[in-house]
Amino acid sequence: MKSVNLQLDHNNSIEITQIDNTLFEVRLGINGSISMYYMTRAQLENLELGADVHIETIRAGLLND
Image 1 (cartoon, rainbow, N blue to C red):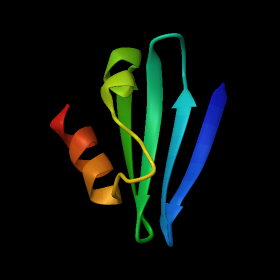
Image 2 (spheres, rainbow, N blue to C red; image 1 turned 180 degrees about the horizontal axis):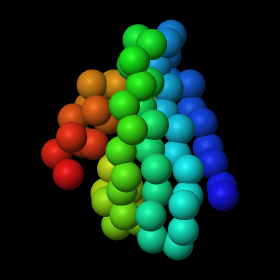
Image 3 (cartoon, one colour; image 1 turned 135 degrees about the horizontal axis):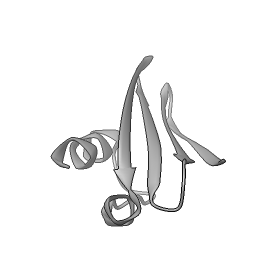
Image 4 (cartoon, helix red, strand yellow; image 1 turned 30 degrees about the vertical axis):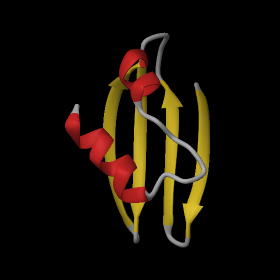
């Protein structure tokens, strides 16, 4: 399994773990609370992450799918 963990700001982080070629586990930590999502490669590629993206935007993107 491949995994990447990004510390976004203060107590907020996102961890993405590749389960197989098309399935990923995404753990989103917001102020000490962790939410876990399962996403396909296509869903993950459509999730825009960048330097100016706020944690609320990432969470909204995960909840929309």
